[in-house]
Image (tube, rainbow, N blue to C red; front, side, top):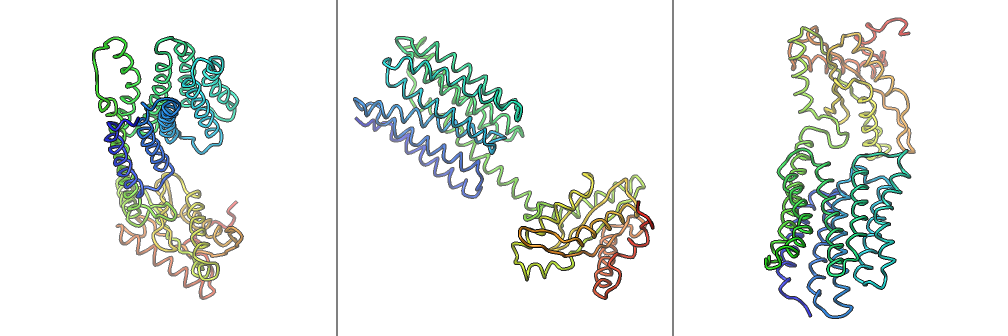
Length: 435
């Protein structure tokens, strides 16, 4: 017998999942794919529950599929918020939890004839996470992992107490599993989304409400048997979570767009817009403290030949390599930006000096003069560097940029004319014996 009264719930969740998929397609990340897979599981949960009243094995199978997909969805939600999700041991732990949970649900629905296996599986639900956590304690130790280990240990003890109650032990055990899974979701999302946005708040509150359903519902049945609430009331937290997750995706997309507006997509370095803003701030700080600030403009000499001979893919990898090398050469307080196709700019803030800037420029040129291994290819690009120091060379941002650019072009033209490859300002300031 098909319960057609559940069809509106199926349709509502299916439409909500389609809306979620529409938003997620603009945010192709592993997290959004896990969320979408979990919502498909929720749709399967509602579809299976339409056949819950079917007599015989079909009804039992519908119950098993309905509860299992709901548990799997929660575990996928939870796993999507695990900071160490890409680690292999994290995959082992979530696989162990899903397998033991699914096995327990199947045994619970099968009935009392497998009581010994039910007890053993209830023990495994708590022991497996603990054993894996202890086994990996030397290589990995995270408070979130131990929180969930304790939560599943509590679940294991609860199942051993509840599962053999004569009247409602099976229902209470299923509710205990679902409560643990969705309460775990709220803990994980609270840990990961601590930025306090509307999407994070709604999602966390929705998961807490979703978990509370599996405590409040059996409580009402036990203490207020005459009170009846429609299924829509118990399903409301699902819609709250879906709405919150859609908001999270939109918020993430907005943050990503802001990031792309200020950063170079290929290298992740600040782009010219952010570079100019930071340079203006650096000059203002230097002016206020009567200190110096240095601007270095670095242009790759033979980058076009690399693109023409080895291809644009190798050229992109070369730019990424150069950005990593440059970022590792300066202090955290300094700025490295990609301000052109093959042009990089560096801001050296206090404490700095012309001599220090010259040494940085010399070291960058040396790094680029040496052959660079890019995959199976080797490239040697070289670089031209122009240095301008505030306030000695210029008193404002525009004049400082012009001075650095002119010195960089002088260096490049000098190299093309077989002149000394080191900028004259660098060469004159370097000591005779750097050691």
